[in-house]
Image 1 (cartoon, rainbow, N blue to C red):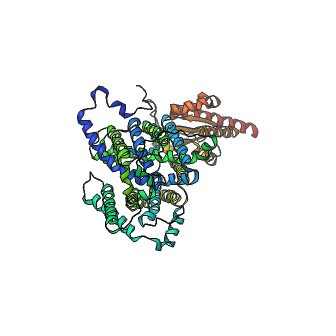
Image 2 (cartoon, helix red, strand yellow; image 1 turned 90 degrees about the vertical axis):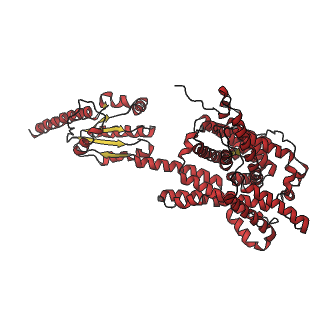
Image 3 (cartoon, one colour; image 1 turned 90 degrees about the horizontal axis):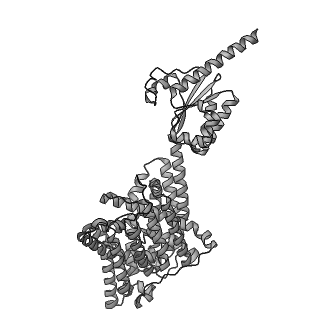
Length: 581
C-alpha cells in the first residue's frame, strides 16, 4: 500500500477524469458570489477591529481566500480574517508595529508548513475541549469589550489596552456616550438578530444591517445634518479608490525572529485549531473528508504570502464555510470565486465603503462575539470534572485578563499535563496472587496446550503493568519494592498490557532489575509485545537480562520461576542444615 502524500491539495483533483462538470461550476459560482458578499462586511470589520485599515482586511480575504482554496486540504473551507485574531493582531501591532505583525505572520506560516510536513494535523484533534472553549469564549468577550467604544459612539475617547482598564475607562466616561450613534448601532444589532431568526438564511443579517445602517446614516446626514462616525472619517484615503497592492518582502533579522517567535507560535496554533475545527464541521455536514496535514500546509502558504501584500493573519472561517455549503458549494472553486468577487469589490466599490458607519460595524462584531462565545457550551462544561473546570476557567481568564499569547502557551502546557495525567490514570502496577492469575488465564495469549491451572510458588512474585510504561508511570517503580515479600527469589514482571515503553520507562525497568539483583531476586519478563521488545533491544535490556529470562507467555515464565524458587529454597535448606551441624 502506497504511503499517503503529506501535501495533497483537493483542488488539483477536480479536473482529473472529467470530475468537474458544468453543473458543479454553476453551483460553485452561485455559492462563491453569495459568500463573497457575506465576507465583505466581516473583512472590513475584522480589519478595523484589529487595528489595521479596512483594505488590509479585504486584501487578507482576497489573497488568503484564494490560496486556502487552491492549496488547502478541504473541499469547502473558506479562508480569510476571523474574529479570533483580532486580539492577538492588536497586541502585536501595539508592541511591535505593522512590520512586526508582518514578520510574525510569515513566521506563523512557516510554523504551520512545518507542522503539516511533520504530519501533526491529527494532534490538534486531541486538544482538550475545555481549552478550546476557554480560548474562544475569552476571545469573544475581549472582542465584545473592544467594540463598546464604537457601539456607544465614544469616538474621541482614548481607551487603554486590556480588558479591565477598558471597562474602567468606559465607566469613568459614561458622559461621553453619543446616544445617536448608540441608537444606530442598536438598530443594526436588532436587525441582525431579527433577520437571522425570521429572514432568508441565504442572505446574512450582517449584510442587511450594513445596508440599512449606511442608508439611515446618509439619510439623516442629508435631511437633518446629523453626522455619524464612518469608515471615511477614520480612513479618508479610501474615497480616492485603491490600487492593487504590490508585494513587499520584509527584512527579517535574527532579533526579529527571537522577539516574534512567541506571537508567531500563538498565531500558528490559533490558525491550526480554528481551521481544522471548521474543516471537521464541514466534513460532518457534507460527508466528505479533509486532509489535515495538507490543510496546515495550505494555511501556512496563505499566511506566508498574504502579509507580503499588506494582509493580516488568516485562517479557515467556519461561518463563511457553512454559508458556502448552505448555498450549494460543491468544491473549492467556490472559495476561489469568493476571492474574485472580493477583488472586484476592492477595485471598483471601495470608494463607497467610506459611508459605512463605525457603529454599524460594531454591531456586526458584537453578534460575531456572541456567536463565538459558546456560552451554552461554557455553562455545560462547568458541570464536568473539577480538573476540566479548572482548565476552562484558567484558559478563559488568561485570555481575557492577561494575554492571548500567554493563554495559548499555558493552554498547550495544560493539554500536555492533562494528557499525561489521564495516561497515568489508565496505567497501573498490581500484584497478582494465585486466585487473580487463574481468573485471568483465559484472557492471556497462551498456547493451546497450556490449559492447566497456573501455580505460583510462594517464593515467586508476579506483578502486572497495565497501560503504557512511560515517564508518567516511571516514578511508580518504587511500588515494586514496597510490595516485596520477605522470602522472594523470583519476580515476574508481566507486560502483556504494555503497548509501548519510552526511554524513561526503560531506565526505570533497568533500575528494577539492578535493585532485584542486589537482593538476590531474579527478574523474568512475560508477555512482552513486539513493539516493546524492539525498544528493549535498542537499549540492550534483552542482553542485560538474558533472552532466556524473557517469555512470550505467563505459563512458561511461571514454570521457569517456580523451578528457580524450588532450587533456591532447597539450597537454603541444605545450607541451614550445614550451619546446624
